[in-house]
Length: 185
Image (cartoon, rainbow, N blue to C red; front, side, top):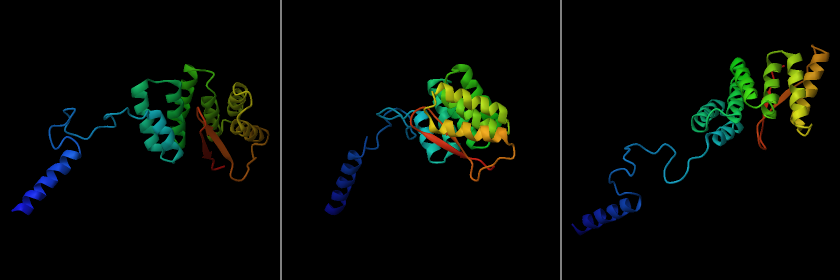
């Protein structure tokens, strides 16, 4: 009898220490919180960038859509959505989103570069070269990834049969990150 009372006392103390002791939910919602509890939620764009770096492109796309819902359809969000679609092989959607990003901000270097990558994947070499040149000029030639993309596109323009083994076009995003798109060519 004493043992069962001690066990009940221990369990009730343990439950009380774990939260609201089984009472009604703090926010009135019977379900687990959707990322917003006592602290701030992590920005969808940041989550998407991390998922892209981890190779989880479909999940990144969902995070970017969440970012669009939270912060609006900004140049950052449009460019990120375009890059995720590119990784998923949705070249038409990627091109539309990246062009839309450039309508919002025509000086946004990552969108110019990533549009160039989409155009290369679609064998629109001439337009891709011009796009990479624009990205390179806006970036003042500081990005090694953009410089390499331009070099590869120019080589392909000069010689359509040109192909380096393991040709890699680099996607870039605002900040320190970069994504590599491994071309099949």
